[in-house]
Length: 331
Image (tube, rainbow, N blue to C red):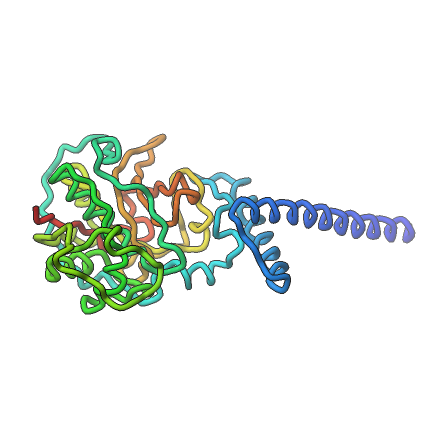
């Protein structure tokens, strides 16, 4: 009997070791395929560290997708990074507290259409851009919104300069690659009397000296409209009646692996003091009874749904209604 027990234990150990080896071999193959897909190269000293992180992320993704969730996760350009590394390079590292934002958007009582998507209403939304390893998401949310409101007002869709905001908007409590808020960036553009185009002020994904040339300003802000804190119906009202809306929210670990579906989380906060990423709501809809926002991100088109994501609407998910805003263009 004792011999049988020993054999059982030995078999279990051998089976476990075999499974780990098979998984590691398969994981190494997956990692090398992923490296090729995203053109990643490492020194040998870093290779095994990134392989280990990749395998851990792949395990989290597989575990999530095996359960019942409203969204799926997948490998992307961030799959060799820990969330701590991702947060350091791609999210707002300076605390951004939206509580000081005073609401001045006046909502109507509707009725509102069941869905809105400004991408389908005309040539009003620029292509998804890529902020790179710089916490400048707030500048892309800002330019995306101003590009859209200007196009709606004039019929001309511009590509505006995120780099000008990175380099020049610090006097309005913005911090270049360390963070900022769209509402503060809109104020900078309003008082600075204009924003240049991306062609005239190219993006570099790093902070530099301010090179703004007033004579080359291409878009202007007449007023900044802040939607009352936590008023998601105010966001619906603004999107339905006027234009896309900038907002900030809190990104937590599983969001960096988002692939598709309606994102929800029980780990993020819904308060004004925890927001660490800014994006652009271009519409809203619902699926199987769950309302959601259609959101343009700034992590390139290989992330999420061709650079977009859906996030549950009506619950202030991850604090997304903490500080939403949009500019009134001066045309």
